Image (cartoon, rainbow, N blue to C red):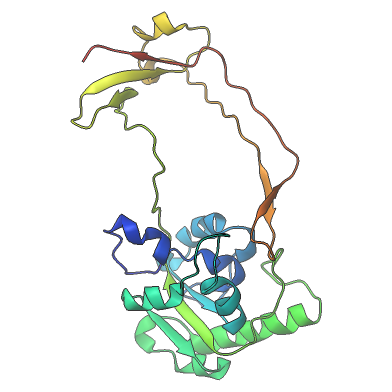
Length: 246
């Protein structure tokens, strides 16, 4: 998400999310790349947490702006210019007409603009020559060399909650007014009836499971993921949710 922008309105989460980061270059406060941005914005987010200040400068060019920032990111949904939305929301942002303008980056931003300019030029030279960048660039090896350049300061954020249950420290699901309603019971060998008197999670060994199908890397062209090496994990039959008295 753009750094320093209030996320108090959930309706703006999608508008301001920097999904296009998979096709841009991200630099930390030292002016260096530190992650392969193309393998997923969720991984970039985790990597950025470990960098100085947990903030970075996201750099895109006119091609990325045309194909990813302002175009429809998901088929069927109208495209919006996320750069403009972030700029209007007060994000630290700029448009540079050339890479040379990075040397004029305001000192208060805290980034070595000239070094970032040099790193972008080095990146472009390597990918044009078919070499390997460090960090890698697995899924989008096109250079960022079409001016103007679009710059936004980014920060890690968790900005969504697609349903789920609110629980307390003893795994009781809570109603809107905070009352206990149900307990999730996940100990092997227990039945639904057992869950009513089941010990709290702290008193018993936990057993986690999932039923998931890993997805492969996102296509740089289609922006979609394709299944690779599907793996299914089965949950123990003892996992139950039973009602408890209020």
